Image (cartoon, rainbow, N blue to C red; front, side, top):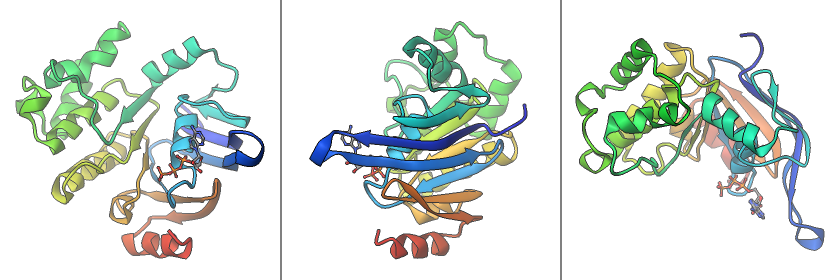
Length: 242
Ligand SMILES: Nc1ncnc2c1ncn2[C@@H]1O[C@H](COP(=O)(O)OP(=O)(O)OP(=O)(O)O)[C@@H](O)[C@H]1O
């Protein structure tokens, strides 16, 4: 498919009114090309979560446009947004969000099952194999380490071949070794499997796994860092007073 996997065009979002109004996003325009791993960074309160929630159709914008592939999200009904999130967007959260009573395989396939979609067996094997989860599929989350649980969550996000995967601090609950494994996998899913991943992170080392860093400050894009290194990101964040 042509064009970016997702994007924002001149998006603004204000929380509250009058004296207490906060401009969380202030005329943000940004494209996420297919097959790219992007980090969204910035000081606390800079608008990262708001931007990701608007991009993923979890929150609405006050002005501007959001698109996933060629679909314009502005103007979609709640039911249409729910379907779009289910079918075309993958999520990875800091807290894994796996169902404790289901084993890894059932967790990975749950979204497809609820959508009445059949998994593509070859793609399922590719995702599970890339994540090294073949021998963990019958384990429940409580029988897996944090890193293994997050790899299950990554597999769940990717198994439906979404247009884009949004990862919100995916390494925030992991030790550095497990975090590195998850980041390595997200990068592999982009480079070798052609997926598009957008990750919100505070961690300059996590950002160094990506192809492109975007720094927000006060709801605006403050800097773009192609092929970010941890030092370059740290320097830019320090410059913002983060
Ligand atoms: N539901 C809400 N109601 C009111 N204000 C909000 C709401 N959500 C976010 N904000 C405000 O909007 C601004 C941007 O918040 P946002 O959560 O997007 O920042 P962030 O960069 O993700 O921060 P953090 O790194 O701390 O998670 C902040 O000033 C925040 O207080």
